[in-house]
Image 1 (tube, rainbow, N blue to C red):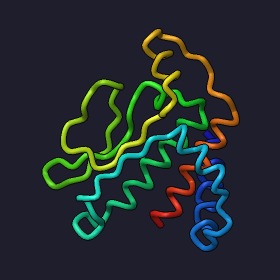
Image 2 (image 1 turned 60 degrees about the vertical axis):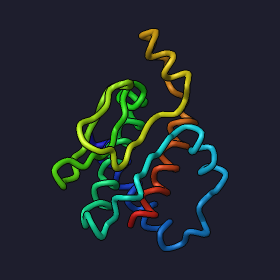
Image 3 (image 1 turned 90 degrees about the vertical axis):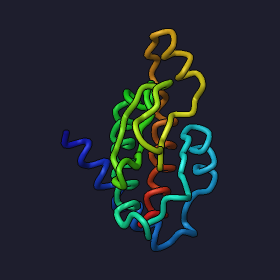
Length: 147
């Protein structure tokens, strides 16, 4: 558990630095991260309407980073995100092919088609350390944009 706290502390520090100096963001790593992670954001839901929206998104991204740092155990077979139900934002985790209750406001998915195929076969092939590092960096950049 201490390792998880360390990764999130590092993510918090790096995202704050990225917010202060966005010119230092490595766009090549961001582009590679876009090949691994799919982000959906419904622009109809705004911080003006839902003041806690960005904080909730950051919390979802932090959960995803925790999962990725442990080898993409949940994200390989599930979608993680936020829904709006009864004018409240609520986090969700649902298996692929299952729809969460409410309107999807924000979602994060592991994009690699091989992960989906492996999930369908019941395989649990490990994700490379390079992919883990790239995905964490990409999501850290996303957090910096929400700060």
